Length: 338
Image (cartoon, rainbow, N blue to C red; front, side, top):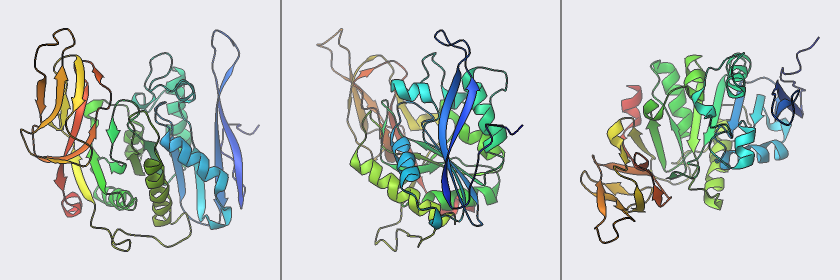
């Protein structure tokens, strides 16, 4: 009997697929969790897996992938696309970062075939979808908690050839800023498992702040299309920042704890910088007030190092330990592959 969860491809067509997993809940003891997605196949070329909605309050990538599925001309494809617009279906429906049970989908990889529903989703990706893919996209934004300058970003994998290919794909997004990041904020990431399997991994932070803007969607739309052309899975001319008359992109490394300015106390936060600003060590990047002591001056939060502001917290109500500002140290592409 054919496996109903195996992706189906038909040459020259966009095909609707569904990933279905048993999901016993209070209102449905024999229910399935359904994750709709689409595939496109035409000719020879790489297989590219595109995922959005890993976190439920990051809707920019979901919009881009739904648009891609509904508008793509299969004759322009060279290879195969697997497009999952909304991975954390219940979190996205609730417009929350985490699932209703509090699970972070992006902290459970590689998952388990017999674990929680989130672990089983991760297991399906890790054992079914990643192995058949050459490239894996994980499209994020800052959700409610961080407002980023729209960008593509990546982690520094150990394998130099894999790193070079990932760097080239990231730069093909042609955003003004790119960020290098690490596991400072936790383990079990989707990208970490895809990287472990040797895939070219492309990820993004397409704005955030709890809003979807025309700018973030436009940047994501242009960047995604150009990156797919760069990878050879979509027909068309590959643009570069030089061909667009733009200066070289800034690459900023936010890979250490000191690159994240955190709230030392709970309170009401005022950002003192915006994404894309350059700061020096010691500059004030946020002011934190205590509503319980309204006559007390704000606590000044300062940058630990010189760099570029990649993202800021847009929410005023702040809990002790929250990230207020992400500051990346400028690095060159040559440094990363040399």
